[in-house]
Amino acid sequence: MKKLNTILAAVGALLMLSVTSANSVEFKAGVSANGMAAYANAKETLKDSNRITNEEAVLATSFASAFVEVSSEEIMGLGIGISYAPEVVDLEKETRTIQNVYGTGDSSVNDSGDQVLNGKVSDLASIYLTMPIGDTGAYVKAGYIQATLITSESLATGSKYEDIDLTGTQIGGGVEGSLGDMAFWRAEGTMQMWEDISASGSEAGASTGQKNKITAELGSVMGTVSVGMKF
Image 1: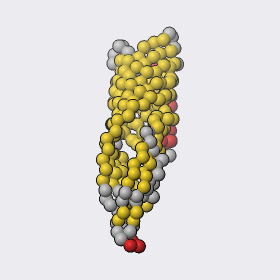
Image 2: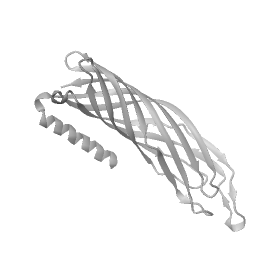
Image 3: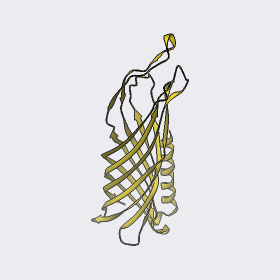
Image 4: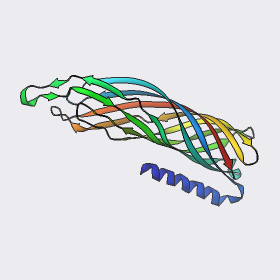
C-alpha cells in the first residue's frame, strides 16, 4: 500500500505540472537496463541463546526497468519522473547448521538443525527530480527509492521473518542525447543510501521471551543505460 500511495502521489504531481504549464511541457517514456552493486552488513540475534552473528555481503545484479517523466521549460527544465522494476535480484540461498540446546529436563529448548536463508528483492520504485546542466545534455538527479525484501527462510528455531520494506534516497547524474527527432538515449550513474533495516522473528523464545532479530546496513551504486521517446 505504501508503494501504491507513493506512486499515485507522483502521478498526481506529473499531471499537475502538465496542466499548469501545458505549452512548455515535454513528456518522456522509456526502458532501462540497470547494473547494480550492493553492500550489506547484517547482524542476527537468536532468541533464547542471544547468540549474535555478523555477516558482510556484496552482490552484483542486472535488471530491467521502465520510466515516465515530464519536464517544463518554464521552470528551467526541471523534470519529475517515476521508474519501476518488478524484479531486482534473487538472493543466494545459504544453509547453516546450528547445534543449540538450552535448559534441562522438560524446560529444555532444542534449536538444532539447518537454517536455510533465502529471499529476493522486488518492486523497486523510484520517484525523482532531474535538472539539466545548461545545454550540454548533462543532468543531475535526486529522488526517493523503495523496494521489498521478500524473505523465504526455513529456520531451525521455528521463527520466520516477515517481508521487509526498504526505503532510501538516491543521487546521481548522467547525460542524454538525441536519436532522431523523437527518440533519445541516456546513460547515468546513481548512488543509493538505504535506511537501516530491522526485523523480528515470529516466535518468542521459551526461556527469555525474546524473538530472533535481524538488523542491517545497506548501500548500493547503479549504472543505467536507457532509450525512450519524447513527446
